[in-house]
Amino acid sequence: MLTLTENACDIVKRYAAHPDTPDEAGLRISTTPGAQLTVATADEPVAGDQVVDQDGAKVFLDQAAAEQLDDKVLDANLDHSGNVQFGLLQQA
Image 1 (tube, rainbow, N blue to C red):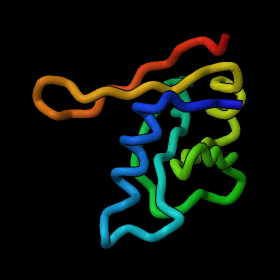
Image 2: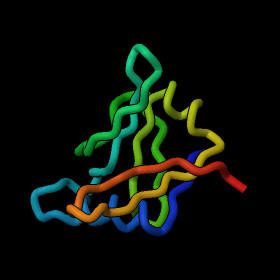
Image 3: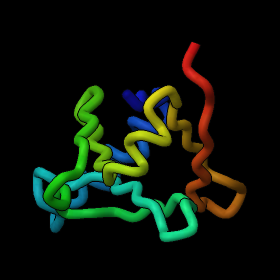
Image 4: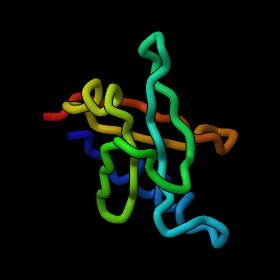
């Protein structure tokens, strides 16, 4: 199952802590028809999503993304402009 680094947890929780965001909110990773991964914020999981809840950070994965990321670690950092950059690492 996908795991998150401490940085990724902090960034996902920061989004969910916004006052206008529902308690169920998180990050959703889904796949396109070409098997590319897309990342977006989501107020709740879509039916059939795998939910990863790590230290209060919620990530929703569609079925294809869950299979593709099963042995991965999601990392996140802010670039010099303050934009979030995500990366994937292999689980140890």
